[in-house]
Image (tube, rainbow, N blue to C red; front, side, top):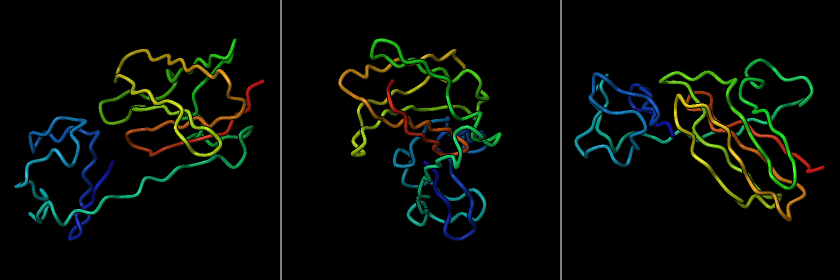
Length: 152
């Protein structure tokens, strides 16, 4: 999640390392101390606003933009198991794939998996009894990308 200072628009990103503030990456905003304040204008923590994460759906799945193509994982479905690889995505300290979700058509989460930064990540989900589903990929920098798939 990302939060911005209501006064100066500084962005606090939970996925990034804030070296000057001595805050480790993947530090949830709620876990920051109460005395945390904006490093630019010193506005208090209570005046930060959570940015709504946007889910980006491609206009044309067969003609992806560069940004879309690096965020859509490669996948294979075999015997009701989907194997998802995210190895083509950039893997830097401040830009990596963080989570992958599988959703049902009624928007219920089937399963979610958290990925480990800087590791070769191949994720498997069991799709038994599911014919249609959505894959969502959460990037630490570029929000959430999604696509609907039909199991063949």
